[in-house]
Amino acid sequence: MREVVIIDDEESIREGLPLLINWKKYGYDVVGTASNGKTGYELIQQKQPDVVVTDIRMPSQDGLEMVQQAYNQGLSFHTIFLSGYSDFSYAQKAVSLGASSYLLKPIDEDELIEILENLNEKDTQSLLHEHHLQWIDKLFGADDTGINEFTYIKALRFGEELELNDLKETFEEMGFTSTILFHEHYQYILLLSNHWMDQKKIERKCIKFFPNTEIISSRCMEGRHTIKPLMIDIQTLSRLLFLFPNQLISQKSIEKDNQKQSSTIEPIQEIGTSIMENKNIQSSFERYFASFYHDLALESEIKWQVDYDIHQLIYHIQEKMAVNFPFDFTQFHQEVYLTQNIFVLKDLVWEKIIKISEFLAQELNNNNIIEEVIRYTKKNYKEELTLKNIAEHFNYNSSYLGKKFRKETGYSYLNFLDKIRMQKATEILVNSNLMVYEVADKVGYSNVDYFYKKFKHYYKLSPNEYRNKTS
Image: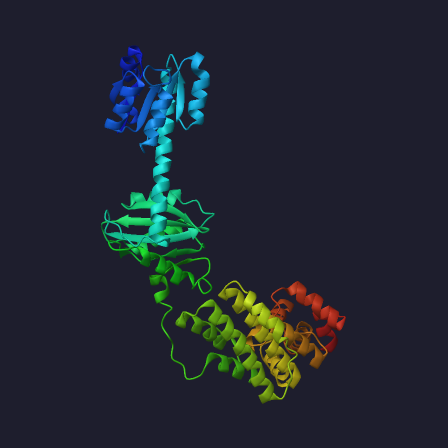
């Protein structure tokens, strides 16, 4: 309850103003009155109130002089000046000197209530600001002291653009005391409790409110001596944002990734071997990038390692296979260091490795793969074949395989497939009594009309005409 003193030479004001409104309803208590500036100053010294309501013109000492004298003595309070219409210029001067507000006599009840409510809001904001500065100093500044009111404390860091009030209310419904802080382009929610916190439950709430969002969650720790370790946690985890972008990061969430896998061969060497032997690259590529999670590598370490490994990979292949890659190392170096997270870097490296693999295969003029594709197609022509699934079957890039196939055979793959199917269809037509739709199905066409058109395009006859002509 804030304390109020009323100082006015009019008895009706001194006695009537305490009764004009329900002061306690608005958080105030009238604790004394005085009839002039001199006794008023003594009352202010004695009571040291939160609010002084005073007339401007009074005997012995006017209200302006009295308030100024009290301020000079280091006393702090809000001042509400009372004045008549003839003293309006004095009231304006009082406000310019720092008075909280003024009221014209006769006093209006609603105006007084509005002023008191404004003072409440002002004091609340001032108190929040003061608490905010205290927390900032404890977390980021020189204050190494801890907290006495609570046993445990936890910090969560969010981007500055997020609206956190609903999440804060949810935490308070869970039984936590919470506060929102702003510091250097980030927002923080501090959770305080006298009981150990269920961190999984807290983090699930964060993810529910802000899915696919960068959030850093410290451990729950005792804060009696200092709360600086909270920021050590946050800063340490923030160094892993390159590995774990757009998600919640906590010590628990990364523990499952902090397990090293033993392997007798380095993944980058496996990639090189796979390229040179024209084998599946995907599995060794995935193991290569998984190693960064196992080691919880930092952004600078990852980029340096990738840049170095790709250089070494190319040199090794060039030496082994006697080829010369037209590779722009300077451009690759720049692209690597501009990537924003591990996923962008991974896509970049995969693109380069595929280009290396395609170039090597082209340089070696590997005809065996086309022969294998032809054999496979003749054997499986009844199946639903496409260039894409053929390429996947042989662990090739579909675009590269398609170009190579056309170069070696003179046909696109689909035209070649149609040719094989038409040949098989003519054999069945001549040597069986199957209906046309049955023939179509046996050679891989589920749509009989499409088969009919294809057949007539190839042989200039319908299937039945062809059968009749050759029988």
